[in-house]
Length: 402
Ligand code: EZ4
Ligand code: CO
Image 1 (cartoon, rainbow, N blue to C red):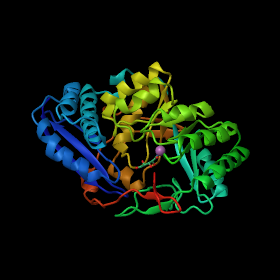
Image 2 (cartoon, rainbow, N blue to C red):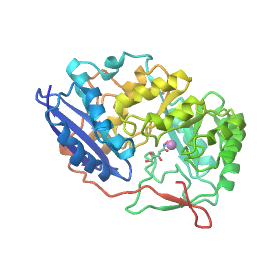
Image 3 (cartoon, rainbow, N blue to C red):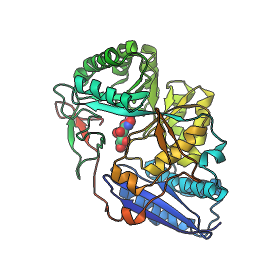
Image 4 (cartoon, rainbow, N blue to C red):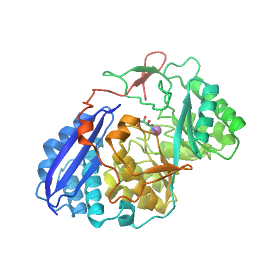
């Protein structure tokens, strides 16, 4: 099966998505997500200028060899742009292989390890009362695990609080929106939020929270400790993970489980945290960490240390990402949970898919391949819109981690 054509499709049905479509001489094609929020065009150029010319004429069935050719062959290894581009190729090739085999992708990976994929949704509100209500709304929709984020009194634009009803999207302007960050207000507020949620919704529901890289290690240790009474499923990105030794300090102070890795793109980004058992969930994901091929290696390493997967699944990861992730999740032995931020109706219409939500679980469906397609005619109606992620500053104007 020879690759005849590969094209990059950019569309913006509510938000920007970059999709790679690989076509073969036998009429089978595959798609892969290549979206890197706020930096989409860099991946488009990488694919169009440096990757597509290498693909034409290759045997589409040689997924591993093509992965190695793109990784080793570039000489310049790793990095979000490179690894997102490789992921798009890898996902599209797995889609092709599974379609050619007439199987849903999870069957090729080794079959289902579970009946469904536990997902968590995002409840957020302007204040504690609204967030408590939103958690109830997600419970009513059938979710068993819910991430809660709330506006903080006196802090403009706290992370994770949407303006719309359901579809929170942070990349909202051509130039970055400025938000405020105030650690003292936040660390006293967050335990009150979770106390209110547990009081209203009981002990059974799984609760998650994203700190979005904003605390120092000792502040993160303190927050984790103060959240212990509310039994979080995880506290995410509690401090930035560049200096990974820092997590030892967090671990010394709290038994709140830790999740890190949505911005990781390589097994080497994950290695120190996993091997030193400094985290409980690894959040690397198919689209930003080199595709199915590389995610299998990351999960294998994690399994040695009882670290489970918790793949990133925000709306900036297209339905093609979600489909691929769900096949991976249904198979992977050390699965933990999958993030699931619902896409808008426009996005869902551009990417027809077979995955479905029932009773708190997603299932990838039985369609051969990743079970997600792209309607190119409809996609063409939504041209690219330049958008960047916000930034955060402290009260005195110091640039901070968004
Ligand atoms: O802010 O994907 O856990 N989810 C997140 C996301 C990220 C966005 C950035 O593009 O932290 O919502
Ligand atoms: Co996050």
